[in-house]
Length: 142
Image (cartoon, rainbow, N blue to C red; front, side, top):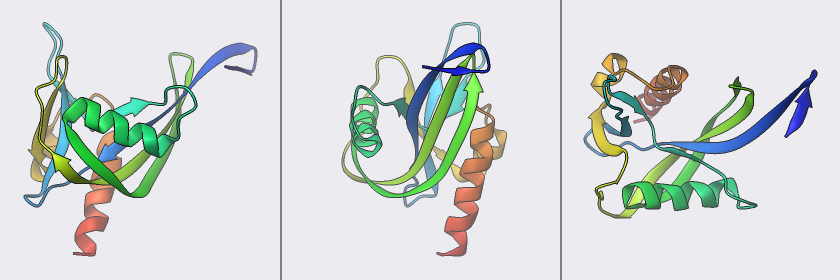
């Protein structure tokens, strides 16, 4: 926590991953709530205790999806304030090493074709630009 002006602000550091498979599909989370439209995001999580961000990313992705991943590189950082919480997100490109998709208790994970990204109802609208910029750069080098 810290003071921002005269308001006490909580802080949160976390990660989000961008994972493409060889079929040009992006690993995404479906956030479903009763009587609400389905909203999508890339898998993400927050640091617990004093763990390193990279360790948090690998742990959370395995826990949430059943996939063991390796971080390829950091691709984006974003700072914002939401509900008086200063949020610092780091986006990583990851590749799957092992595992298989598990059935989660709360959220559902799906591989979405990258051609559909512009048409999905996203939970965090600013993620669309991060994902599309990443895909555009990736396509330039392949």
